[in-house]
Length: 486
Image (cartoon, rainbow, N blue to C red; front, side):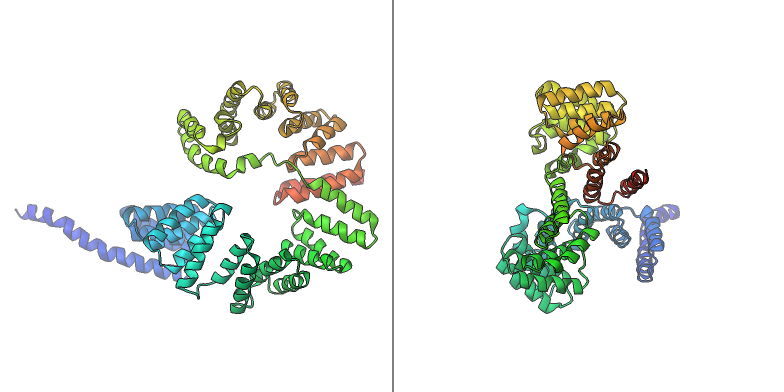
């Protein structure tokens, strides 16, 4: 009997022992976080969670440690685990939404903060965060403004609420409303350079170049120094007829952000007005070379395709191809080229070339007039070393559509590999590609056929589109040095 009583009591005794242990862990974790010892706090929580995996408090605190470490994926996993045990915790949903924002998963962020807003519709911070997230897409921007204004009505002292409302008004082209809110933001915080920038943009939209110029200068003097702000100041000066003064900020804008293509237009305009014809012509050529280029990667970054990819990828990882096709057939992402084409591109992005080839062959059979499907198929063949077959496929694509960008890039690449520089340049020029790698080949082509000025101009175009592709930019600098030393 004594043994039986002992067995019956032991769960209760153990439970009573876990409470102080858990409480002590949370206290120790809070102390470690306060001291900045995040790794130690993480280890402590992870060890304790191994014994209590469903404890929502422990999971939330681990999520907060990950959040402070900017480990967004870890934070998301922990917050989701916390919500399994406490589904209606506003704080957890709030930080889950913010973590999704940092991962650029705006659909999931919107879903999480919407749940928080349902649970706490009058929480000012939740309303503000909901508004912030909704501003990320044009279709929900008016709804965003409604939530932001509701947040300000609940608590007018929320950090940067006037700025966020003013910026959203600007994005909705309600310029007068934007000016009022942005001026209020600056009145509350005169050091807010970003608010001054958007106020400058608002005045520029109304063509008030003096006011715009003053606000761009104010933004720059209050730590909001970036390419667009210098561009704005340069444009305001040019529009005011101060062409010589406009040159320095416009040049600096390009130094900070070579992708600001419209800066070349403004520089060309300023040089022309100053009688500096040769420089004006060069800027005009650069502007022409940089505009209207075709971004072949943009298809894969379409919002509908991004959403479809998030749902399809787990299915493909489990080799559930039929379910993936069924999902894509119902998705707006597959409109135009069809589900087989889209699945082929997805397989290719996963490194599954043979599955991609199979899907694209199916896409070509379903739609024999699809130049794009054949061009993508040619790229897979080229990547697999099947040069002759790839050339035939590219030619069949161009027979259907002589301007198919991917096929032109493919033909240019083959001729480049064959060292037929002039023919390669012809295909790549016609493609109007925005792909930095393809433009690098074109730059090299120009050097090799003696078109040095064209090569140097193309180098500027590459810098505008390459962004942070440091290795490619290093290769570009090396290429220029090699040819200039010859």
